Length: 597
Image 1 (cartoon, rainbow, N blue to C red):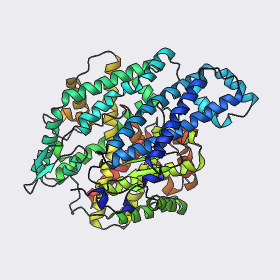
Image 2 (image 1 turned 90 degrees about the horizontal axis):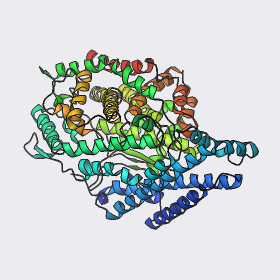
Image 3 (image 1 turned 30 degrees about the vertical axis):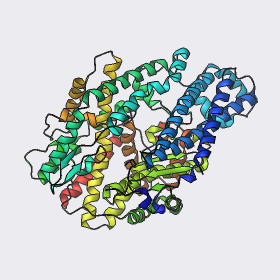
Image 4 (image 1 turned 45 degrees about the horizontal axis):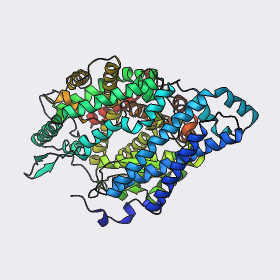
């Protein structure tokens, strides 16, 4: 049972006053943001004739984006801390409405820049007044031409178009009542959406099977609703892509605003997505090898879906106290420099990490950030090796946010989505190296298991999901009928290719139902590229090919460089097979260590 929040020491809880002193301050900034929306919207009705007025408009747009990040942060923190808090729910709804307005303004501003590009070139030549905004202006001018009437209409109905996401949240989260199964000791155990993977690691195979079947039976009861909502989401994205001048859902997704959303779109060429899908698919031998090793280690004739997450480690799983996890991580990042390590330590001291699960809280791990406030991490730490690595991962995001915020103005306090997972996976790899060097046999065995889960999920799992989405989206865009049965068939083909040594059963083909449906359909590529980039970066840091200062420059780029340029800074060409083979080889090296023990 989780504790009430009131029983957790304040040192381990967020300090919401670091964002706003009181809810009234939130209300005041929300009203200020609404006024900025009105002022920017009015300014965009006139051509950019006056340099000073243009600069004022761009400055207001930047202030609006910065305010949005703070408002979203505070509202999300409230919902995370207490799902039963009606005031927090109401604040999130109000911010969601503002977000729709901000996105509409951002779309209009980008069109305004595109339509008057020559005038902006003249203004830039005559005055340096908007030089701080040059990157935004260049980025907006290069965006695809869109149908203004359709774009405005879709912007006005942005909140309606996102309705499928709210339906999916309701089906898969808010209204999903976790089923219960009989535990190994005979007591009932709840199989929660976000907690089932932990249960599927239990050594009792009959119990694992009950967990798997009961959870997927509960999903099957919602199969039609989940499939309908997700397919409608794809159809909405297809219309949105067309209206905004993109050729496909994928092109729209790969050109979506970077995070946090400040108005900058740092797109990824579709050729990189295709290269990722194909090169990872050509590097599956280590992934297949893991399946065979797990089957043999467990002494099974057949590996079944409920056996896939069982640790290979024979020793009982060690516990890592929260404070010890911090000590390990601070030691692990020593290769990144003392300044980096000390800056990381301040995040704990300033109560910007919400450490433990609490009653009525969302049990999630994430890092949110806001302009002039920095990063805040939800850890849901439970003492396992898994959550120690989750903590390291989210603090990798946090450190990139902190260092970027030191040198970038609010407009460029954003990161290309293709590169945003690199710092977090670097943290995990550094922590793994540290623990493998200094841990006891049991800890090292479980760290290797964690490495296999992390690298396997980010590389092979993400590539499989990326191919699943690519196939489904192409069907929608071609006007073909897409149904739950068709999605089952697509998933079954991919499972046969990626997990051929797992003997499926009747629920196996429908395992796509457990995906993160509320996220952008094409979000998986960033995890695969994160693993690829992090393996290359840590290897280069270790052998001196990538100086620490150059890695820090990578973290500080923010919205000032295209995503491909940021990968090139790390010495990576994500269109070539080499970095994918390197990541697969790192995975295979872990298997070699396991088999040699």
